[in-house]
Structure formats: C-alpha cells, structure tokens
Image (cartoon, rainbow, N blue to C red; front, side):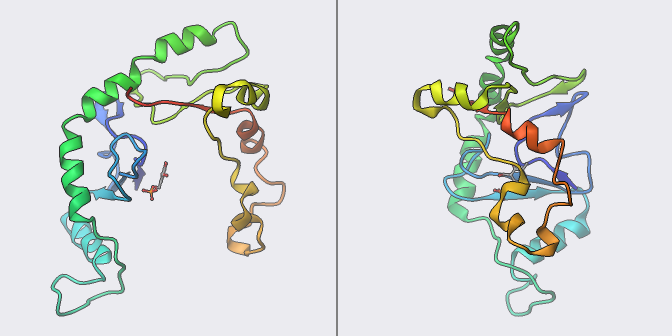
Length: 194
Ligand SMILES: Cc1ncc(COP(=O)(O)O)c(C=O)c1O
C-alpha cells in the first residue's frame, strides 16, 4: 500500500506515484498539493475486487443501500468536494511546476550555510508538498522569521497519545534516536504554488 498523501504528481523513473502498489492513498486535505475545501481523499487501485471492497468499507459496508455485507464506516467523498477537486485537478500540473520552481534558488541560497536542503536521488521527481530543511539552530532561525516561520511538528514520541500509556501506541524503549534529533533541526519552509 502506497501512502501518496503528499505526493500528487511525484515520479520515480518517469512513473507516477500511486501506481507502484496494490493500493495507493491520496489525501485531498485542503493544504495538500491537490486540496479540497474540506477533508477528502482517494484510494486508487487497478484491482477490481479491492476497489469494490474499498467502496464498501467507505459506504457503511454495503453495495446496495438495503443491505450491509461487512462492517464499514462513513467515509464517502462529499459531492461538493468532488466537484471542486475535478476543477482543481486541471491546474495540478501547473501548480506542481510552480512548487518545483524555487528549488534551485533555495539550494543555492542554502549552500555554504549550515542548512541542508532535500536531496534528490536520480530518477526522482519531487513535488514539494513541504520543503523541509535541516539546520542546527532551528528554533533561533524560526523565532527570527517574520511570523515565526512555518509551524513544525515533533517526533511521534512527543505526542500525548503516544506518551499517554496506551501500550500499542507507546514508543519503543529508548524512543526514536534517529528521528527525534532530526525533528528538532527540521523546519518546513512555507511552500505553495504562489
Ligand atoms: C504522508 C501522509 N500520510 C497520511 C496523511 C493523512 O491524510 P488525511 O489527513 O487526508 O487523512 C497525511 C496528511 O496529513 C500525510 O502527509
């Protein structure tokens, strides 16, 4: 299953993400590269039986509205969101290009500073939902930016849900020694098509 929530239009060796797994999930949360005006998302698959099953789960476990075959949920895409997404979809490629445009200038500006910009492996086409950089003085820089800069999250192990004692959500003993220090050094720069 591919989590392509932030990756609309990204490619690996010329092939679009969302086509690698049995299933792929896209988020259309308003801030995403293709965003609705409220919460929305989609699952894509080439497997007809999985498609049927996903539709059932999203529609209270039913195929026809007089019977429920399995336990499902209400996760239908609202028609209004669908209409908005259909219009915005035509602009996605142009908006993606605009997101990609500043990357060279950002990299040039960062070079020689103590700032690491995202590495791009050969064959990868990034769509920069976020532009996360890494710097030793994240909090100082962020405080100096007008408006405090972009908001940033933390490690999973900082979350109340994770630290609240539920065993299945608890971080492993020793936490995440790789991820936690990275989180403290990684602000996301504001990144939008405009
Ligand atoms: C990588 C990734 N996976 C999953 C999600 C969840 O998407 P949604 O908010 O539409 O449920 C998000 C969005 O926040 C995301 O960025």
